[in-house]
Figure: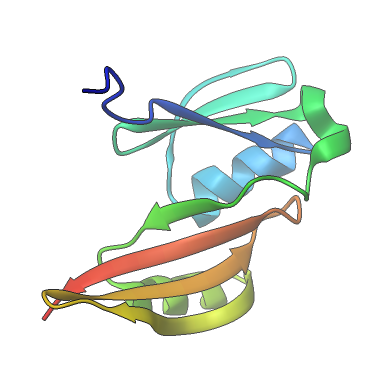
Length: 122
């Protein structure tokens, strides 16, 4: 049995901390917990998003982060209307017996690729 039971924090590199913080706070609607020199922490459910400009040389080439959406079509419309670059429109990536898994891809302000996912019950 694993002692691990969830993800508490995800670090995302940022080239410009103010621009990245504005994107995650204003465009994605995440709550700002605190801001320090070259870093910001935002709330996303039970997971903290740690924006780190100290790792700026790795911005844009991060591991993929997937955010859960309650309604992917509505998220798509809001993000597109906010000027977010949509890399791939919402589409079904898996049809499971009890749900369909939807995914779309966007770029954040720092060129990191982000997945937006909805698991829709059938």
